[in-house]
Length: 167
Length: 226
Image (cartoon, rainbow over all chains, first blue to last red; front, side, top):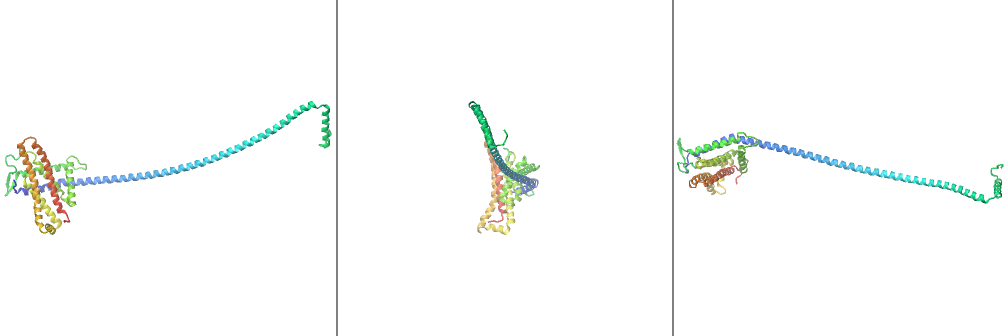
């Protein structure tokens, strides 16, 4: 069962031949292919990484721009609000002044009207009073008294020498 | 289970050639195994593509697994030996499984094959060791840590090829013998189960032989020996 002979040497030679054949026809091409694949995968990964970095940068840029835009919008909003506030104040002020002026005008108008009305009223009252007095007096005075009154009046006029008219 | 019919189990048909004796069946089976390995390798690498498919996948898987193992146990220097180790594994694997086909015998059921491979590995180990460390260091290494250890070291070095070859030889031969015996004793089910297990044993033994060869080779490739 365990008998050593020249087969041992033959087997070593056989094996070495096999090693030579395999390394030439299978191992080398396989290794080349594996290296090629490795290089390819590496390059793919590298490019993917590069693209990722570029995308990252782009995103960062966009974010910065967005932030800037937001700040600008904020500023514009604030300005507009301030302006609106100012305008509102101005308009209110104007309105207040206007209303005050109107009020004053109206008051003056009313006062003047009242004054005028009072004047008219007074005239009316005098007229009425004279009319009423005439009526009352007309009843009480007789020809004599009336003439005397007229004489007195003329006398008075003479005495005072007003106008000096010959009548 | 009609192999080794007509002669005793484990015995070989011999032929005399130029005064040397050759085991003919072992040689035939070796050539067949070589042919199968070459065929598989060519088949797998015939149309190599970046995107692997079919046999290329399988061979690549085996090769890259072995390459990883080589890299981790032997370091970058081991890459030069990678074709040898990969071939060793594929060859022993095919040899082991060949004997499971009825009518065929494993070349590894012959001690000449296994001892031949083991001696080749051991010769390589010592050659590389001398080349790597220098002859003085190589000889000095046998007398470490103390001079009397030379006996133990030499026994260890002799034991390496012996254990390496007999382990493989014994496993494969015993497997084949058991297959025949079981086939005669219980013709159904049991031999099938053993056959299935033998497939596993064949893989494991090929792996063990390769692994041990690698570890022996790696120790000879190390620069700083302690």
